[in-house]
Length: 390
Ligand SMILES: Cc1cc2nc3c(=O)[nH]c(=O)nc-3n(C[C@H](O)[C@H](O)[C@H](O)COP(=O)(O)O)c2cc1C
Image (tube, rainbow, N blue to C red; front, side, top):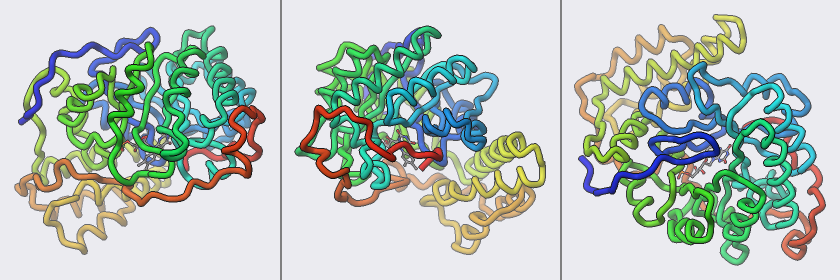
């Protein structure tokens, strides 16, 4: 049951789309593929963003990347995240998306904190180069505009506490014509450690006229209501909280509708969701491989990473957990799920707890001279990743 009261909110306006509830599934590389998104969409409304695609891979028509751009027939808007560092390549990638009608919404990723990306000036390092950032965002917006495809940006607070960029970058993105700005309330240096700074999200909301989306540490539906109450944001972006708990989207819809019920599935209900998830991944991989045997094996392999999240807090023995995390077929999965006690109640101790990545803060590796040259708008060399995900 909810303990947070909320006034009925407004739908999130994203270009020509009205989204209710104002909830976005955060793009997560290796997670938010078409199967996972369908599983989540079956629970509630919102926008469900595809895994990140790199602009270079798209422009080079990398077959693996093209397979990653897969949407359900009923997915609307089809939301795709792009990673790029070069305005021209980004514009070319957006033109491909628009001309081939591959998506209805494009989100630009400026939040990636991994060293191999920031060391070359990409991801969370890029907004520091304010002219390059503005040029890149404008290139994407201009290329998407003829088709009426809204472009949004997703970013962090900055490189570290001494090099914050989010207000300036938000204003620049607004000026460039984005439909919304999402802020993950951490710096790149924080990675996934500590707690997200919702005050920064409130500051950005105050500064911008376009819709602002808040991101970071929404573990339960009531956290989303709290974030809206605290910051005034137009919508929330939910990542790790839904890992092993796609029903969080049902709770979020209930919460924004002003209903107080929340899901606490028994282990039997969780195992039905696990089976559904695995089946959707198998369907996805069979479609991609056009080979049922290989597709089932690859789908099951992709499912394995989710097992520990689904079982978090449930009293399930190590051996059964390990076997579930090694499945190669749906028949094997059925057999193992049959060994779980379906009456086991949901472990309420797992509620409100971080899940997924929670790593410690770290030094942000940057190209030489990066911090001393904010107005240099040269495209950083080698910062375009050539594969997608990451
Ligand atoms: C496994 C994983 C993969 C991620 N991949 C991406 C990505 O490709 N693009 C992106 O913008 N953010 C990515 N993120 C960051 C999330 O979108 C989100 O900003 C972050 O997890 C904070 O939100 P949360 O506290 O709700 O999880 C990823 C996060 C995780 C845990």
